[in-house]
Length: 399
Ligand SMILES: Cc1cc2nc3c(=O)[nH]c(=O)nc-3n(C[C@H](O)[C@H](O)[C@H](O)COP(=O)(O)OP(=O)(O)OC[C@H]3O[C@@H](n4cnc5c(N)ncnc54)[C@H](O)[C@@H]3O)c2cc1C
Image (cartoon, rainbow, N blue to C red; front, top):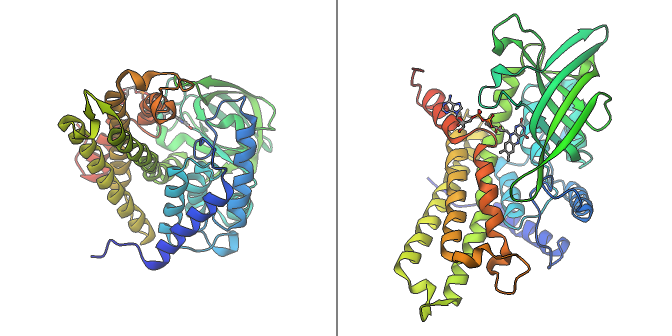
C-alpha cells in the first residue's frame, strides 16, 4: 500500500499554492470557501469571490475531474481534493462547493445528456453558483415529512411551500429544490427534484437568517404559486429521494474537508503556545496544553487519511455509503474539538474583540467555535450520521 502523493500530485499542490500567493492579497483575511456565508454588506468579498471563480475557471480547475466534453479536465479525483484543501486551508473563496462538489457530480451521475449540456459547462466556466433547498421548518433529519408541493398545470409546475436554512440561496443563481409531487404514495416515492433559477423566478421571497457568529449564512425561502417550466424537473418525477441520496453522498465527504482550515488554526495555536509565556514559562512546556494539542493533531491526521481514502474510493467508482458518513462525522467532530481546545487554551484572550491589541489568532477562534456548532448539523446531524453508518454501512437492521 502506498499512501504517498505522486510527484505529479505534489507538483499540482505547489501550482495551487503559487496561484494563491499570486492572486490573493497578502492582507486578505479569508472568506468561506464559496463566500456565500459572508455578511450581506461585504460586497467587496462577493466581488473578490466572483473574480477568483473566474480565475479558477480559466485555470481549468472548476470541475476538473469531469469529462472534457462538458468543460472538465478528466483529472483524477485527488486533484480536485488537493485544490479544495489548499483553498480551504487559506480560506480562499471562489470554488462553489455546491456546484463543484455536490450538484455538478450529481448531475453527471444521474442527469440526462440534455441536463449535462445545460448545467455542467456553466459551472466549469465559473458563471453560476448553486444552493440547495431540502430542509423545511418541520422537516430536517426526516426529509420525508416535507410539505412543500408542486402541481403540474399545463406546461408548468406550480410550486408552493417553504424551505429553511438554504445556505447561500440569496447569492446563488441555481437552486436544487426538493418538493412533493405526489402525496398519495409513500413519501420516498412522492418527492421530486427541480432546478430553479432562484434569482429571477417570480413567486419566490427570501429572508436571510443571521447565524450566531454574525454571518448571514442561510435563508428562509417562501414559494407562492412559483411557476417553473416542465423541464425544470430533474431526475424524473418521484425520484427526488434518489437525488437526495446522491447529493448527500457527495456533500458529506466534502463537509469533512472543513478540517483543513482547522489544521491551519491548530498550526497557529501551536506557534502561539511556543511564543507565549504563562506563569513564567512558555505555554508549550505545559503538560496539559501539550497533550491537548497532540490530541487535536492526531485527530486531524486520522481525519485527513479517512478523507483521502474516500476520494480514492470515489476515483475507483466504488460506493462509499459508510465512508462518506464516517468522514463527515469524524471531520466535523474533530474540527469542533480543535476550536473547543483553542478556546480553552486562549482563555479570556480568545473571547476578546478582534480589534483588540491583545487578541490572539486575529480574534477568529470564537467565531469558528460558534460556526462549528452549526456545521455539526449541516448535511446531517451526528446522530443521523451514526444511524446511517449503522444502517447503510454496518447493515444493522432498524429497531
Ligand atoms: C450551517 C448550516 C447550513 C445548512 N445548510 C442547508 C442547506 O443549504 N440546505 C438545506 O436544505 N438545509 C441546510 N441545513 C439544514 C440541515 O440539513 C438540518 O439542520 C439538519 O438536517 C437537521 O435538521 P433539523 O435542524 O430540522 O433538526 P431535527 O431533524 O429536528 O433534529 C433535532 C435533533 O434531534 C435529533 N434527531 C432527529 N432525528 C433523530 C433520529 N432519528 N435519531 C436520533 N436523533 C435524531 C437530531 O440529531 C438533532 O439533534 C443547514 C444547517 C446548518 C446548521
